[in-house]
Image 1 (spheres, rainbow, N blue to C red):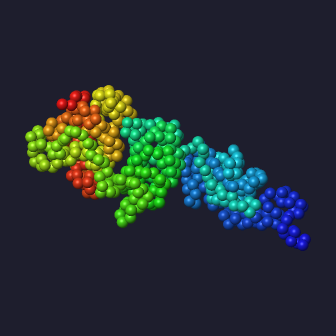
Image 2: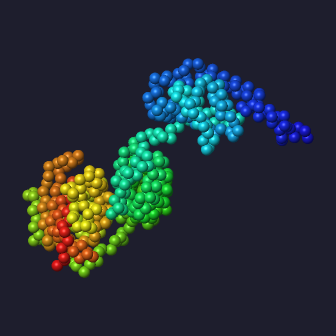
Length: 488
Protein backbone atom coordinates (compact mmCIF):
# COMPACT_ATOMS: atom_id res chain seq x y z
CA UNK A 1 0.00 0.00 0.00
CA UNK A 2 2.74 2.44 0.99
CA UNK A 3 4.93 1.39 -2.00
CA UNK A 4 2.03 1.91 -4.36
CA UNK A 5 1.44 5.30 -2.78
CA UNK A 6 5.08 6.27 -3.27
CA UNK A 7 4.94 5.31 -6.95
CA UNK A 8 1.61 7.06 -7.51
CA UNK A 9 2.30 10.33 -5.68
CA UNK A 10 5.40 12.21 -4.58
CA UNK A 11 5.81 12.98 -0.90
CA UNK A 12 6.15 16.56 0.24
CA UNK A 13 9.87 16.03 0.89
CA UNK A 14 10.40 14.75 -2.67
CA UNK A 15 8.54 17.70 -4.18
CA UNK A 16 10.70 20.14 -2.25
CA UNK A 17 13.82 18.31 -3.40
CA UNK A 18 12.86 18.56 -7.07
CA UNK A 19 12.11 22.27 -6.83
CA UNK A 20 15.48 22.94 -5.29
CA UNK A 21 17.21 21.26 -8.24
CA UNK A 22 15.57 22.57 -11.43
CA UNK A 23 17.86 20.62 -13.75
CA UNK A 24 16.71 17.28 -12.47
CA UNK A 25 17.08 14.85 -9.57
CA UNK A 26 20.48 14.28 -8.13
CA UNK A 27 21.49 10.99 -9.76
CA UNK A 28 20.00 11.91 -13.13
CA UNK A 29 21.78 15.25 -13.06
CA UNK A 30 25.06 13.46 -12.35
CA UNK A 31 24.48 11.18 -15.34
CA UNK A 32 23.62 14.15 -17.56
CA UNK A 33 26.82 15.90 -16.57
CA UNK A 34 28.75 12.74 -17.40
CA UNK A 35 27.08 12.63 -20.80
CA UNK A 36 28.03 16.26 -21.32
CA UNK A 37 31.64 15.45 -20.39
CA UNK A 38 31.68 12.55 -22.82
CA UNK A 39 30.23 14.77 -25.53
CA UNK A 40 32.95 17.36 -24.97
CA UNK A 41 35.62 14.65 -25.00
CA UNK A 42 34.19 13.25 -28.21
CA UNK A 43 34.18 16.62 -29.92
CA UNK A 44 37.62 17.48 -28.67
CA UNK A 45 38.99 20.77 -27.41
CA UNK A 46 39.85 22.25 -30.82
CA UNK A 47 37.78 25.24 -31.83
CA UNK A 48 37.38 23.78 -35.31
CA UNK A 49 35.30 20.91 -33.87
CA UNK A 50 32.61 23.14 -32.41
CA UNK A 51 32.91 26.41 -34.31
CA UNK A 52 34.74 28.35 -37.00
CA UNK A 53 37.19 31.19 -36.57
CA UNK A 54 35.54 34.60 -36.41
CA UNK A 55 37.45 35.92 -39.43
CA UNK A 56 35.48 33.56 -41.66
CA UNK A 57 32.01 34.43 -40.40
CA UNK A 58 31.86 38.07 -39.42
CA UNK A 59 30.77 39.47 -42.78
CA UNK A 60 27.92 37.21 -43.84
CA UNK A 61 24.14 37.42 -43.52
CA UNK A 62 23.41 33.70 -43.92
CA UNK A 63 25.68 30.68 -43.66
CA UNK A 64 25.08 26.94 -43.61
CA UNK A 65 26.54 25.02 -40.67
CA UNK A 66 25.90 21.28 -40.77
CA UNK A 67 22.91 21.97 -43.07
CA UNK A 68 21.59 24.54 -40.57
CA UNK A 69 21.32 28.23 -41.44
CA UNK A 70 22.84 30.92 -39.26
CA UNK A 71 21.81 34.56 -39.64
CA UNK A 72 23.72 37.69 -38.71
CA UNK A 73 22.44 41.26 -38.71
CA UNK A 74 24.67 44.21 -37.88
CA UNK A 75 27.12 41.98 -36.05
CA UNK A 76 24.43 40.33 -33.91
CA UNK A 77 23.12 36.76 -33.84
CA UNK A 78 19.65 35.89 -32.52
CA UNK A 79 19.28 32.35 -31.20
CA UNK A 80 16.02 30.63 -30.29
CA UNK A 81 16.05 27.89 -27.63
CA UNK A 82 12.82 26.18 -26.77
CA UNK A 83 10.31 25.52 -25.78
CA UNK A 84 11.53 26.23 -22.26
CA UNK A 85 9.56 24.30 -19.58
CA UNK A 86 7.27 26.61 -17.63
CA UNK A 87 8.86 27.71 -14.38
CA UNK A 88 12.40 26.98 -15.48
CA UNK A 89 14.85 29.81 -14.85
CA UNK A 90 16.37 30.89 -18.24
CA UNK A 91 19.75 31.23 -16.54
CA UNK A 92 19.59 27.51 -15.87
CA UNK A 93 19.35 26.91 -19.62
CA UNK A 94 22.43 29.05 -20.20
CA UNK A 95 24.35 27.23 -17.48
CA UNK A 96 23.51 23.90 -19.06
CA UNK A 97 24.72 25.16 -22.46
CA UNK A 98 27.98 26.35 -20.90
CA UNK A 99 28.54 22.81 -19.66
CA UNK A 100 28.69 21.80 -23.32
CA UNK A 101 31.80 23.96 -23.75
CA UNK A 102 30.06 27.02 -25.26
CA UNK A 103 30.72 30.34 -23.56
CA UNK A 104 27.76 32.71 -23.73
CA UNK A 105 27.45 36.37 -22.83
CA UNK A 106 24.02 37.44 -24.17
CA UNK A 107 23.48 41.15 -24.75
CA UNK A 108 19.71 40.57 -24.75
CA UNK A 109 17.51 37.79 -23.41
CA UNK A 110 13.73 37.34 -23.51
CA UNK A 111 10.95 34.75 -23.68
CA UNK A 112 8.68 34.65 -26.75
CA UNK A 113 4.94 34.08 -26.57
CA UNK A 114 5.65 30.40 -27.35
CA UNK A 115 8.00 30.29 -24.35
CA UNK A 116 11.11 30.11 -26.50
CA UNK A 117 14.19 31.66 -24.97
CA UNK A 118 15.53 34.28 -27.40
CA UNK A 119 19.10 35.41 -26.81
CA UNK A 120 21.21 37.91 -28.75
CA UNK A 121 24.95 37.38 -28.88
CA UNK A 122 27.80 39.03 -30.78
CA UNK A 123 30.33 36.17 -30.68
CA UNK A 124 30.24 34.30 -34.04
CA UNK A 125 32.11 31.34 -32.54
CA UNK A 126 29.44 30.91 -29.85
CA UNK A 127 26.68 31.35 -32.46
CA UNK A 128 28.07 28.57 -34.64
CA UNK A 129 28.67 26.38 -31.62
CA UNK A 130 25.00 26.70 -30.67
CA UNK A 131 23.84 25.89 -34.19
CA UNK A 132 26.09 22.82 -34.22
CA UNK A 133 24.74 21.72 -30.84
CA UNK A 134 21.24 21.79 -32.39
CA UNK A 135 19.39 20.72 -29.21
CA UNK A 136 19.78 20.25 -25.48
CA UNK A 137 17.83 18.15 -22.96
CA UNK A 138 16.57 19.74 -19.75
CA UNK A 139 13.99 18.20 -17.42
CA UNK A 140 13.57 15.32 -19.85
CA UNK A 141 12.58 17.87 -22.51
CA UNK A 142 14.50 18.41 -25.74
CA UNK A 143 14.98 22.10 -26.44
CA UNK A 144 15.61 22.95 -30.08
CA UNK A 145 18.35 25.46 -30.83
CA UNK A 146 18.28 27.47 -34.05
CA UNK A 147 19.42 30.77 -35.52
CA UNK A 148 16.62 33.17 -36.40
CA UNK A 149 16.38 36.42 -38.32
CA UNK A 150 16.20 39.74 -36.57
CA UNK A 151 12.68 41.16 -36.80
CA UNK A 152 14.01 44.24 -38.55
CA UNK A 153 16.04 42.15 -41.01
CA UNK A 154 13.92 41.09 -43.98
CA UNK A 155 16.89 39.83 -45.94
CA UNK A 156 16.47 42.57 -48.55
CA UNK A 157 12.70 42.07 -48.82
CA UNK A 158 10.53 45.17 -49.07
CA UNK A 159 8.36 46.45 -46.24
CA UNK A 160 4.60 46.65 -46.71
CA UNK A 161 4.74 50.37 -47.46
CA UNK A 162 7.35 49.75 -50.15
CA UNK A 163 5.33 46.86 -51.60
CA UNK A 164 2.17 48.95 -51.53
CA UNK A 165 3.89 51.61 -53.64
CA UNK A 166 5.14 48.92 -56.05
CA UNK A 167 1.73 47.23 -56.32
CA UNK A 168 -0.01 50.57 -56.94
CA UNK A 169 2.33 51.28 -59.86
CA UNK A 170 1.39 47.89 -61.33
CA UNK A 171 -2.40 48.21 -60.98
CA UNK A 172 -4.68 49.56 -63.70
CA UNK A 173 -8.09 50.61 -62.31
CA UNK A 174 -9.47 50.95 -65.85
CA UNK A 175 -8.83 47.31 -66.72
CA UNK A 176 -8.91 46.08 -63.10
CA UNK A 177 -5.64 44.29 -63.81
CA UNK A 178 -2.73 43.87 -61.38
CA UNK A 179 0.45 42.90 -63.24
CA UNK A 180 3.07 41.59 -60.77
CA UNK A 181 4.98 39.48 -63.25
CA UNK A 182 8.76 39.13 -63.22
CA UNK A 183 9.44 41.07 -60.00
CA UNK A 184 12.85 41.32 -58.34
CA UNK A 185 12.90 38.20 -56.15
CA UNK A 186 15.49 39.75 -53.82
CA UNK A 187 12.92 42.38 -52.90
CA UNK A 188 9.60 40.55 -53.33
CA UNK A 189 9.75 36.76 -53.01
CA UNK A 190 6.29 35.18 -53.13
CA UNK A 191 7.70 31.96 -51.65
CA UNK A 192 7.95 33.87 -48.38
CA UNK A 193 5.06 34.70 -46.08
CA UNK A 194 5.54 38.48 -45.95
CA UNK A 195 4.90 39.36 -49.62
CA UNK A 196 1.85 37.07 -49.75
CA UNK A 197 0.32 38.74 -46.69
CA UNK A 198 1.18 42.15 -48.14
CA UNK A 199 -0.53 41.29 -51.43
CA UNK A 200 -3.66 40.08 -49.62
CA UNK A 201 -3.75 43.28 -47.56
CA UNK A 202 -3.21 45.42 -50.66
CA UNK A 203 -6.08 43.75 -52.52
CA UNK A 204 -8.35 44.14 -49.51
CA UNK A 205 -7.57 47.84 -49.09
CA UNK A 206 -6.78 49.10 -52.60
CA UNK A 207 -8.23 46.88 -55.34
CA UNK A 208 -10.98 44.66 -53.97
CA UNK A 209 -12.50 44.49 -57.47
CA UNK A 210 -9.35 43.23 -59.25
CA UNK A 211 -10.33 40.89 -62.08
CA UNK A 212 -6.95 39.91 -63.51
CA UNK A 213 -3.77 39.08 -61.60
CA UNK A 214 -0.45 38.13 -63.16
CA UNK A 215 2.25 36.53 -60.98
CA UNK A 216 4.15 35.10 -63.94
CA UNK A 217 7.91 34.46 -63.83
CA UNK A 218 8.37 34.97 -60.10
CA UNK A 219 10.03 31.66 -59.23
CA UNK A 220 7.00 30.54 -57.21
CA UNK A 221 7.30 26.90 -56.13
CA UNK A 222 4.67 26.74 -53.36
CA UNK A 223 1.17 28.19 -53.20
CA UNK A 224 0.73 27.74 -49.46
CA UNK A 225 -0.68 30.99 -48.10
CA UNK A 226 -2.40 31.93 -51.36
CA UNK A 227 -5.82 31.11 -49.89
CA UNK A 228 -5.70 34.45 -48.06
CA UNK A 229 -5.05 36.26 -51.35
CA UNK A 230 -7.85 34.39 -53.10
CA UNK A 231 -10.20 35.13 -50.20
CA UNK A 232 -9.68 38.86 -50.69
CA UNK A 233 -9.86 38.77 -54.51
CA UNK A 234 -13.46 37.63 -54.80
CA UNK A 235 -13.88 39.21 -58.26
CA UNK A 236 -10.77 37.56 -59.72
CA UNK A 237 -11.51 35.85 -63.03
CA UNK A 238 -8.09 35.65 -64.72
CA UNK A 239 -4.89 34.43 -63.07
CA UNK A 240 -1.45 33.91 -64.59
CA UNK A 241 1.15 31.74 -62.85
CA UNK A 242 3.05 30.83 -66.00
CA UNK A 243 6.82 30.56 -65.98
CA UNK A 244 7.12 29.61 -62.30
CA UNK A 245 8.49 26.52 -60.50
CA UNK A 246 5.27 24.65 -59.64
CA UNK A 247 5.89 20.90 -59.76
CA UNK A 248 3.02 19.44 -57.72
CA UNK A 249 -0.63 19.70 -58.80
CA UNK A 250 -1.70 19.66 -55.13
CA UNK A 251 -0.34 23.19 -54.79
CA UNK A 252 -3.31 24.34 -56.90
CA UNK A 253 -5.67 23.31 -54.09
CA UNK A 254 -4.58 26.52 -52.36
CA UNK A 255 -6.36 28.48 -55.12
CA UNK A 256 -9.73 26.90 -54.56
CA UNK A 257 -12.65 27.58 -54.32
CA UNK A 258 -12.00 30.41 -56.80
CA UNK A 259 -14.27 30.33 -59.86
CA UNK A 260 -11.60 31.33 -62.37
CA UNK A 261 -12.39 31.71 -66.05
CA UNK A 262 -8.83 31.90 -67.37
CA UNK A 263 -5.75 30.27 -65.85
CA UNK A 264 -2.21 30.48 -67.24
CA UNK A 265 0.15 27.74 -66.02
CA UNK A 266 2.39 27.08 -69.01
CA UNK A 267 6.16 26.70 -68.49
CA UNK A 268 5.80 25.16 -65.03
CA UNK A 269 7.42 21.76 -64.32
CA UNK A 270 4.09 19.95 -63.89
CA UNK A 271 3.06 20.96 -67.42
CA UNK A 272 5.44 18.30 -68.74
CA UNK A 273 2.99 15.59 -67.64
CA UNK A 274 0.80 15.98 -70.72
CA UNK A 275 -1.26 12.87 -69.97
CA UNK A 276 -2.84 14.30 -66.80
CA UNK A 277 -2.21 18.04 -67.03
CA UNK A 278 -5.57 19.17 -68.42
CA UNK A 279 -7.64 16.73 -66.34
CA UNK A 280 -5.85 17.73 -63.13
CA UNK A 281 -6.72 21.37 -63.81
CA UNK A 282 -10.32 20.73 -64.86
CA UNK A 283 -11.00 18.59 -61.80
CA UNK A 284 -9.94 21.46 -59.57
CA UNK A 285 -11.56 24.27 -61.55
CA UNK A 286 -14.68 22.87 -63.25
CA UNK A 287 -15.88 26.34 -64.38
CA UNK A 288 -12.59 27.23 -66.04
CA UNK A 289 -13.08 28.35 -69.65
CA UNK A 290 -9.50 28.89 -70.81
CA UNK A 291 -6.30 27.11 -69.87
CA UNK A 292 -3.09 28.55 -71.32
CA UNK A 293 -5.19 30.50 -73.85
CA UNK A 294 -6.90 27.35 -75.12
CA UNK A 295 -10.63 26.78 -74.82
CA UNK A 296 -11.56 23.88 -72.57
CA UNK A 297 -14.94 23.58 -74.25
CA UNK A 298 -15.95 23.50 -77.91
CA UNK A 299 -18.98 25.67 -77.20
CA UNK A 300 -18.89 29.37 -78.02
CA UNK A 301 -17.99 31.29 -74.90
CA UNK A 302 -18.87 34.77 -76.01
CA UNK A 303 -21.86 35.80 -78.08
CA UNK A 304 -20.71 38.06 -80.92
CA UNK A 305 -21.63 41.69 -80.45
CA UNK A 306 -25.11 42.20 -81.82
CA UNK A 307 -25.57 45.40 -83.80
CA UNK A 308 -27.88 46.66 -86.46
CA UNK A 309 -24.89 47.46 -88.65
CA UNK A 310 -23.33 44.74 -90.75
CA UNK A 311 -19.63 44.46 -91.49
CA UNK A 312 -17.69 42.60 -94.12
CA UNK A 313 -15.64 39.63 -92.93
CA UNK A 314 -12.90 39.93 -95.56
CA UNK A 315 -10.91 42.88 -96.84
CA UNK A 316 -12.51 44.09 -100.10
CA UNK A 317 -10.36 43.72 -103.21
CA UNK A 318 -10.47 47.45 -103.93
CA UNK A 319 -8.92 48.37 -100.54
CA UNK A 320 -5.55 50.14 -101.06
CA UNK A 321 -2.78 47.70 -100.21
CA UNK A 322 0.91 48.43 -100.33
CA UNK A 323 2.62 45.08 -99.90
CA UNK A 324 6.38 44.90 -100.29
CA UNK A 325 7.50 43.07 -103.42
CA UNK A 326 8.13 39.40 -102.83
CA UNK A 327 5.63 39.11 -99.98
CA UNK A 328 2.48 37.01 -100.29
CA UNK A 329 -0.45 39.42 -100.23
CA UNK A 330 -2.92 36.79 -99.10
CA UNK A 331 -0.82 36.02 -96.03
CA UNK A 332 -0.90 39.64 -94.88
CA UNK A 333 -4.56 40.34 -95.69
CA UNK A 334 -5.57 37.03 -94.13
CA UNK A 335 -3.83 37.96 -90.89
CA UNK A 336 -5.35 41.45 -90.83
CA UNK A 337 -8.85 40.15 -91.58
CA UNK A 338 -8.69 37.52 -88.86
CA UNK A 339 -7.23 39.97 -86.33
CA UNK A 340 -9.85 42.67 -86.88
CA UNK A 341 -12.68 40.12 -86.84
CA UNK A 342 -11.46 38.80 -83.49
CA UNK A 343 -11.16 42.37 -82.21
CA UNK A 344 -14.80 43.01 -83.14
CA UNK A 345 -16.39 39.68 -82.17
CA UNK A 346 -14.28 37.60 -79.82
CA UNK A 347 -11.44 39.49 -78.19
CA UNK A 348 -10.38 36.54 -76.05
CA UNK A 349 -8.89 35.07 -79.22
CA UNK A 350 -6.42 37.95 -79.38
CA UNK A 351 -4.52 36.69 -76.34
CA UNK A 352 -2.98 33.93 -78.40
CA UNK A 353 -1.60 36.21 -81.12
CA UNK A 354 0.36 38.48 -78.76
CA UNK A 355 3.68 37.12 -77.54
CA UNK A 356 4.23 36.80 -73.75
CA UNK A 357 6.65 39.76 -73.98
CA UNK A 358 4.54 41.89 -76.32
CA UNK A 359 4.01 45.61 -75.67
CA UNK A 360 0.90 47.67 -76.40
CA UNK A 361 0.14 51.37 -76.17
CA UNK A 362 -2.99 53.41 -76.89
CA UNK A 363 -3.31 57.13 -77.62
CA UNK A 364 -6.55 59.10 -77.82
CA UNK A 365 -7.45 62.65 -76.87
CA UNK A 366 -11.09 62.05 -75.92
CA UNK A 367 -11.84 62.36 -72.17
CA UNK A 368 -13.10 58.78 -71.89
CA UNK A 369 -9.65 57.54 -72.91
CA UNK A 370 -7.51 60.04 -71.03
CA UNK A 371 -6.53 57.63 -68.25
CA UNK A 372 -5.42 55.05 -70.85
CA UNK A 373 -3.73 57.35 -73.35
CA UNK A 374 0.07 57.12 -73.55
CA UNK A 375 0.75 60.40 -75.30
CA UNK A 376 4.44 60.96 -74.58
CA UNK A 377 4.08 64.68 -75.29
CA UNK A 378 1.60 65.05 -72.43
CA UNK A 379 2.79 62.28 -70.09
CA UNK A 380 6.16 63.38 -68.74
CA UNK A 381 6.49 61.19 -65.66
CA UNK A 382 8.63 58.12 -66.41
CA UNK A 383 6.77 55.90 -63.95
CA UNK A 384 3.42 56.85 -65.47
CA UNK A 385 4.77 56.22 -68.96
CA UNK A 386 5.81 52.71 -67.95
CA UNK A 387 2.48 52.09 -66.27
CA UNK A 388 0.60 53.01 -69.45
CA UNK A 389 2.78 50.69 -71.53
CA UNK A 390 1.07 47.31 -71.31
CA UNK A 391 3.41 44.30 -71.38
CA UNK A 392 2.40 40.66 -71.87
CA UNK A 393 -0.50 39.05 -73.72
CA UNK A 394 -2.83 38.81 -70.72
CA UNK A 395 -2.34 42.42 -69.65
CA UNK A 396 -2.80 43.61 -73.23
CA UNK A 397 -5.95 41.53 -73.65
CA UNK A 398 -7.36 43.00 -70.44
CA UNK A 399 -6.95 46.54 -71.78
CA UNK A 400 -8.47 45.61 -75.13
CA UNK A 401 -11.44 43.99 -73.36
CA UNK A 402 -12.02 47.25 -71.49
CA UNK A 403 -12.42 49.21 -74.74
CA UNK A 404 -15.95 49.78 -76.14
CA UNK A 405 -17.38 47.18 -78.55
CA UNK A 406 -16.39 47.98 -82.12
CA UNK A 407 -16.96 47.27 -85.79
CA UNK A 408 -14.11 47.97 -88.20
CA UNK A 409 -15.24 49.51 -91.49
CA UNK A 410 -13.10 47.32 -93.74
CA UNK A 411 -14.15 49.16 -96.89
CA UNK A 412 -12.33 52.23 -95.51
CA UNK A 413 -9.14 50.30 -94.69
CA UNK A 414 -5.69 50.78 -96.16
CA UNK A 415 -2.91 48.27 -95.51
CA UNK A 416 0.86 48.62 -95.73
CA UNK A 417 3.30 45.79 -95.04
CA UNK A 418 7.08 45.56 -95.18
CA UNK A 419 9.89 43.42 -93.81
CA UNK A 420 12.28 45.14 -91.42
CA UNK A 421 15.86 44.09 -90.64
CA UNK A 422 16.35 41.75 -87.71
CA UNK A 423 16.58 43.54 -84.38
CA UNK A 424 14.92 41.12 -81.94
CA UNK A 425 17.01 38.88 -79.63
CA UNK A 426 15.88 35.92 -81.75
CA UNK A 427 17.61 37.50 -84.76
CA UNK A 428 14.43 37.08 -86.82
CA UNK A 429 13.24 39.59 -89.38
CA UNK A 430 10.20 41.58 -88.35
CA UNK A 431 7.03 42.15 -90.38
CA UNK A 432 5.61 45.65 -90.03
CA UNK A 433 1.87 46.05 -90.74
CA UNK A 434 0.39 49.57 -90.82
CA UNK A 435 -3.39 50.01 -90.85
CA UNK A 436 -5.48 53.12 -91.40
CA UNK A 437 -9.26 53.34 -91.49
CA UNK A 438 -12.43 54.00 -89.53
CA UNK A 439 -13.92 52.15 -86.60
CA UNK A 440 -17.51 52.28 -85.29
CA UNK A 441 -18.03 52.24 -81.52
CA UNK A 442 -21.15 50.18 -80.89
CA UNK A 443 -23.47 51.70 -78.30
CA UNK A 444 -22.19 55.28 -78.53
CA UNK A 445 -22.82 55.22 -82.30
CA UNK A 446 -19.72 57.27 -83.11
CA UNK A 447 -17.00 56.67 -85.67
CA UNK A 448 -13.30 57.20 -85.04
CA UNK A 449 -10.44 57.36 -87.45
CA UNK A 450 -7.71 54.96 -86.38
CA UNK A 451 -4.07 54.20 -87.13
CA UNK A 452 -2.40 50.99 -86.03
CA UNK A 453 1.19 49.79 -86.35
CA UNK A 454 1.96 46.17 -85.52
CA UNK A 455 5.36 44.45 -85.52
CA UNK A 456 5.25 40.67 -85.98
CA UNK A 457 7.87 37.98 -85.50
CA UNK A 458 7.52 34.40 -86.81
CA UNK A 459 5.36 32.21 -84.57
CA UNK A 460 7.70 29.65 -83.03
CA UNK A 461 6.62 25.96 -82.93
CA UNK A 462 4.31 25.11 -80.01
CA UNK A 463 3.84 28.79 -79.15
CA UNK A 464 0.31 29.95 -78.38
CA UNK A 465 0.23 31.83 -81.68
CA UNK A 466 1.33 28.79 -83.71
CA UNK A 467 -1.11 26.53 -81.88
CA UNK A 468 -3.85 29.04 -82.67
CA UNK A 469 -3.07 28.94 -86.38
CA UNK A 470 -1.35 32.35 -86.65
CA UNK A 471 1.76 32.50 -88.83
CA UNK A 472 3.21 35.32 -86.71
CA UNK A 473 2.96 36.74 -83.22
CA UNK A 474 2.66 40.42 -82.34
CA UNK A 475 5.66 41.86 -80.52
CA UNK A 476 4.56 45.48 -80.51
CA UNK A 477 1.18 47.11 -81.15
CA UNK A 478 0.54 50.88 -81.22
CA UNK A 479 -3.08 52.02 -81.63
CA UNK A 480 -4.17 55.63 -82.11
CA UNK A 481 -7.85 56.55 -82.00
CA UNK A 482 -9.00 59.89 -83.38
CA UNK A 483 -11.73 62.12 -81.98
CA UNK A 484 -15.30 60.92 -82.25
CA UNK A 485 -17.41 61.78 -85.31
CA UNK A 486 -21.17 61.20 -85.75
CA UNK A 487 -21.94 57.93 -87.49
CA UNK A 488 -23.20 58.33 -91.04
